[in-house]
Length: 68
Image (tube, rainbow, N blue to C red; front, side, top):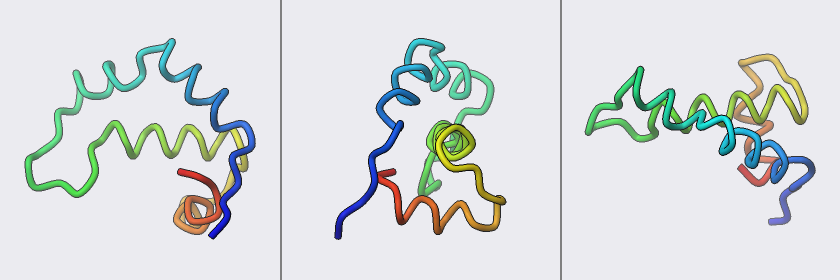
């Protein structure tokens, strides 16, 4: 399956420079039983808003289409 890359590398670089993952992990530590971390969810939502904004109920569809 081919997935779109688009501006995701740019978004990834900006979130890295802003230390988004460090900030989120510091404020919202994840539980050991979680399938994904809070950081992963926030990074995916930020990437969605910046690349192809979609309603929250459609973020899963967006993530399946894009290389997230």
